[in-house]
Image 1 (tube, rainbow, N blue to C red):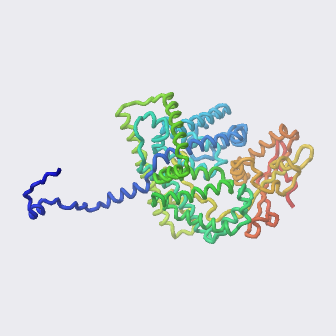
Image 2 (cartoon, one colour):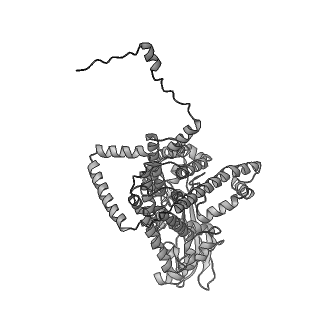
Image 3 (spheres, rainbow, N blue to C red):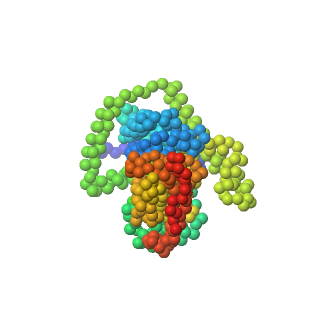
Length: 561
């Protein structure tokens, strides 16, 4: 039973007592801009954890692949002694491998790098592990600069930016040791640089491609797929569909120019665009033999997957009836992770002064990096503008601008020594390669035979040794090494050391001594009409180096007619 409530409030008094409507304060442009910036550079901590796992697995995979040619490429018994590597790396190059030439110790450094990668994989003392992994990867790259590609450069840069990211926030031993709920996401200058690295690479490559009519017309991609030395798996089959390749090439070209949207968008639009880039790199992985570039780029793209991706992934798992299985797997991994974390010491120093010192070093490093990038990004273009009336090539004007800009040359020296200088990112740009190439090493034996020592000692001929030219290289790094051989010719020690190695090792492996060796590069000109018809291509021969084994003089060995 409700009792009546008496009140003496008149309508006039009610109006006077009524709470005034809430008026929103005027918007602050600075706050709005900061919020928009945060949305653009925000990285989900689950994506950071996935990125960490990717980096660790890539280090382990690279070590396993390099180990196949350990003696040949990484010891003084092979073709790249330490003295040659040091001669062809930047001034003050960082490499712990320069401290020893003992093969056993070098192998030990390989093992140490693998152990650090495992530490990064489980996220134990993650920032320290990332720093050590970066230094060891840079050291290994400087130990043999002749087998490197853009994949190695991008990987070093991503590892460098990873140092400033909280990679151990989730799915890690560090997260278990912290005993607090992980942050959902992170948005700061470090995430901006990590995301910006990928976008910068794409945009610069797109701008280079914009200079070529072959890319803007779509004719570049069919030519690329005509390069037998690089295409494999599905790449050989796709040559039969030039129109499809043209449309695919145009789509990739426009994606490169539109890659800033990877940062400007968020939510599902960003997720969909990220998937487009991941799909493109996955297609490269099964068509073009360009090393680990596709996998490194996919690792970098995981950073663009925001919270929306993980929510949608969970919804898809529930719709597919996989939620219980995934939850069971997550629980099992969590239990195992806690057991691993319990077995590892925390070994942390709980000191306020130390925490402040760490924070100061972290912030100071970022300030120096930001200032350096601003100098290079703003001052150098201004200097280049001064030389605009100069008729010299753009690269020469840029080099002079670097020299004329106070401090920038020193910045470039430090970056090169640390392995984090930005390359021109001119992959297949501005014009794609329009030649195929293979190698023939004519050699004369003591018995008077003439053989091709590059292609397993077959009787000397200048024809192809393989229908698919990529098969002439045992590993993808051998192709990059052979590029160094042909570029160096007689001007560097790369080709002479390879020829000398063949002279010394051939008798033990084949039972016949060599008298002399020639190094020939055979090139085939690729046209739109001969993409899938190598037998119709125009062929040319280039002598790169001539070598005499032992005390024998070099000399011509049945040059091609």
